[in-house]
Image (cartoon, rainbow, N blue to C red; front, top):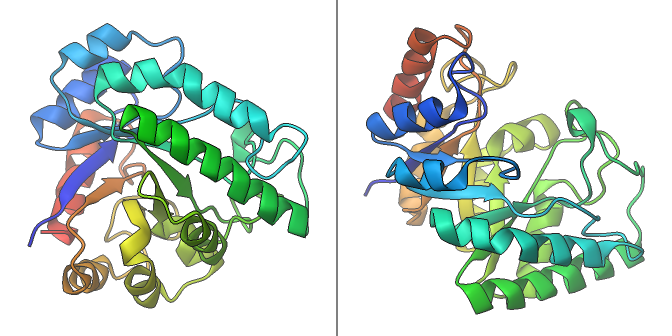
Length: 262
């Protein structure tokens, strides 16, 4: 039983232009994850022949804020043509709006019932949009300890609860195990519980957010747990290379990633 492996083009080979990063990732036999696609040469990216597993799925509003949650759906709809041109399968959304450095645009320290209800209704709206266009929206868990302070409903158990409540095939989890390790731990039990609701998995080691094998997470053990649970979807490396942004360091990071999930 094998996984589909992808690499986030935003975090490796930083000395290369994006189009060359995508080509190199593709040449190594991986699918490609993208972040914000606005202002990028979409026809050129499509012409690389790469398979794009995911991209950012909104650029405005907060999923859990009743004052502007409608902007999430509106911005997602504007990105649909890009996703279709690239053949993207999943568009990633977050529990709240991220600003510079990944910090919350409107930080909160406690989640309210209104946030839960708004998040549910917004995801239901995205489910309808995804069903119409054949795209899955993937809600990503985040850690609020280190990278994303002030984001409500960010823990994996919260994002899982929202996805379960929506219960629609076009809304899944983007299960980020780097964030989950920092915020929650118990990763093997997490993947077992979440497996039916996972659309894609992202990985990086802790600490440092580098490739598997550079930190404390037992990724070969997690790979076994995923196989045992029957997961055959995408696992994406959303990590920097510990050796830096050069081509050699990127190649080494991709090799370590593949070895962890082979």
